[in-house]
Image (cartoon, rainbow, N blue to C red; front, side):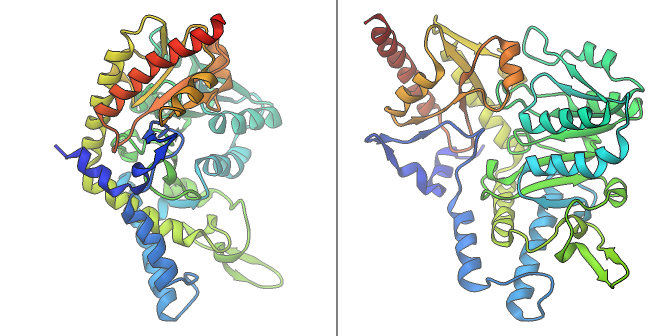
Length: 412
């Protein structure tokens, strides 16, 4: 087992104080902190081989190209892709979903077709499909939640039919931490001739992920949630599908040849990567992948499960608290959404900040799910590799103090 307290030494931001108190960062579902190895990779690129890629013949361009394409190769291995040709760099997971909607959806979804999503999707895996359905006269179909906060898989079996053209689901809920059975939904999709897209923005940073095991046709995720810089996302797609999809943007590296009469697009993966890409951040993202591989994703999952069990054990003893989603830590990731009776989540977030604790409060870009839960928003604590049980103890103590303070203010 890894020494997780030793891991913390790689994250300089964790030495910061907020309101005079040591930072306890529990907003990892929004973005993760970055280790020195990633920060130094960015610095090294700009100090030593800052150059554009692919087109240059000089030494620095070749070095940058090797580092950039090396990151693509490592990401392919990380998710068990068959080839680095199946890895497309984007700005974020949201853009990756929109590429699938624009380049695959608009050419394959027709009037009367059905697009199946779940009731707990992030807006990024909701709004693009909603708009496509409106434009095409298709139907958006929702797999609802069971009473325990998991997906209703019996409903999924009824809803995924030969009218379904794509099933697009989260790997792990960013609100409740619910982990989805991808193999079950992927099998249902393919059995009915539909494609299968996985939004891995929350799952890939925390769970061992194999695109060949899930047999997904598309997978999207963002590197900033898994120790990398902002501005880098990934679209994985099966090569035979990506080959058939037209580019969404034109110019730069996505071109193979241009004449006055005709433009020929480049081969995969570059046909989807128009213009100068985010070179430095992609290279640093490769270093983030190396960091996670060195830890081992099975170990990452085990550590977060240990933290989640500890947090749930303590929080479920608080009489005024309501936790949303699965109560069994084995069925969820390191995400706990909660509310105190009579306390607005924004007030809770502000009070905890005075104790140096960073959480998220609001609707978490999941307004349809909030309506299903019957709330305007929740407070959310989310864990990662550098968090400790001692931090969770302090967090729960701060929750108890916050409730007393807010209830006292309310009474006055």
